[in-house]
Image 1 (cartoon, helix red, strand yellow):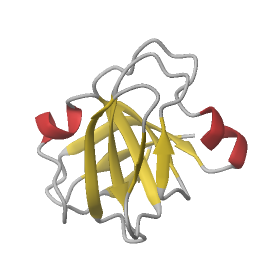
Image 2 (cartoon, one colour):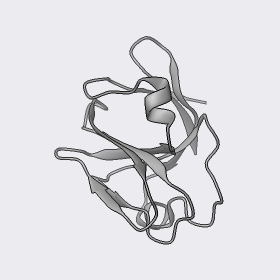
Image 3 (cartoon, one colour):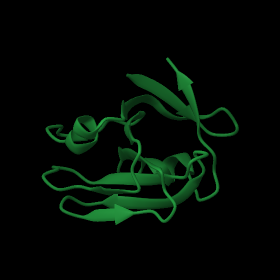
Length: 115
């Protein structure tokens, strides 16, 4: 299933965001992809951490709490690395550089809009 994520101002943060809510889809994540285009992402939920084992490209990881408030942004996480966010309940994986380009910062709240 895909959704859109928007910030408090209604600006699109992830226009085509794939939901990964079961163990298999969270484990598979972005494996097998060669890149992640701008505007696309993967929302891992529930998740408080993530890894980039076996991945081919770096990503930005945006850690969200239970209210979808950004608690941490890990930028340009390279392959074979891990990252975690204290109190995170979900992780939004975006193309490397997207979090900065979009101005995503700690404290922002993201809303889910079903497509």
